[in-house]
Image 1 (cartoon, rainbow, N blue to C red):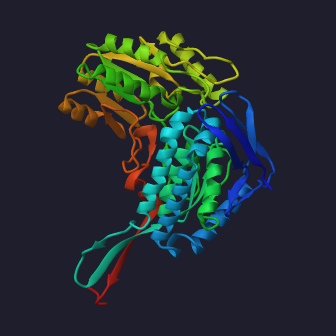
Image 2: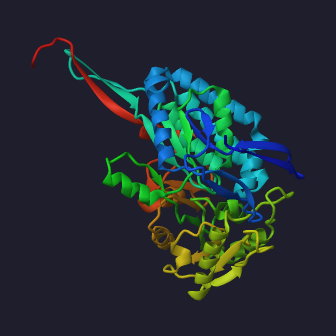
Image 3: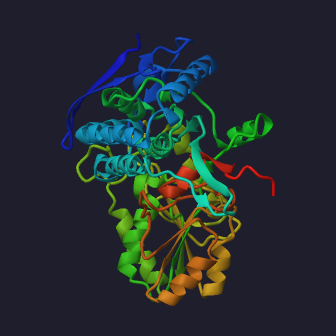
Length: 479
């Protein structure tokens, strides 16, 4: 039998015991991996091992897929009405609400994001996503299409079957909810692989899935290894599976002379330093028009210096550690490349505190060139570049000069300028006078090499259904 991870929290922000099953979750039960091997899970704040979880292999995936396929054919999919699926999803969301602080503590421990951020936004938004798709479960329908009086033509939106999902480590619970909710609501069964760095919140939710009463095999969780481009390649070489991918970004944040500078500073800090900069749509390229450049940079610097860096459970902590020593070294490598290529470190650029922890100071680069790695490549850390621009045409060209196209922002009081620039930016999401604003009902995804497909809203459901056209000849005559 798999071990149970137990941990006692005794912090100013949260006190209590948590218990997490550490096995694979297959066919409604926690089980040991077939190999009996485990993966060490580290606390990113200290670099020390928290616990071990079972390490899934190809054999375990086969078992999970078999369980998911059986559930799809017998107790889920088209075998149950959408209303029943919705009720179970809503029950799961309710149980997560009852465990909100516990889930937030597990996530902050495992991932390193500040407890206050996780409790105040990550967990509530994850719960809201599941509730949103619970509401969709009995509203997925096709169309009746008029052709002629002798025929009835309509479409059915049918669940695909077993869906394989892989999620990253930067917002584990949110990614888990974002993936499973639309797939289950549409009637599919799921085999999902959390990141081997941050699997604990997903495993804790599996216990709530049991408690909610989901049929065995509907949701299966196997911790292991693999990533995006390899999945795309494998799908193209096998049986052309339908693929959705979210592959990151290098998002521009454009601030015009007429912007409210104080508000632009606040949103810019939130855009790049939220969750240690480990978000796919981080506003890492900050373009500021020349008329307010000096004022913005001065205020942005003061605000960035004021961020409290430290233990995710510390009072007023805003910025926790990077996820791992490997990621920390990767970010520091980018900082070094910026210096080596001639950029100026205006602020930060250093590790913070004990070298065993993975903390990096908020970093601001100036005096950059468009060809620098820190301008072109996704860093996934608390590193920004602040770039002066003169006019609208110039900044649109610079903002679009990237292989990515996930998100962008525009700060201006001129509504015509906001529309014109927003429409010209090659990005899947454009924010105006705000940043990092997402909603369960609003689609999210990228252009260019930022991925394929959309999350959130009704758009996400499109990935989890096959559209079948039915042509019925009522009069049974040729013609």
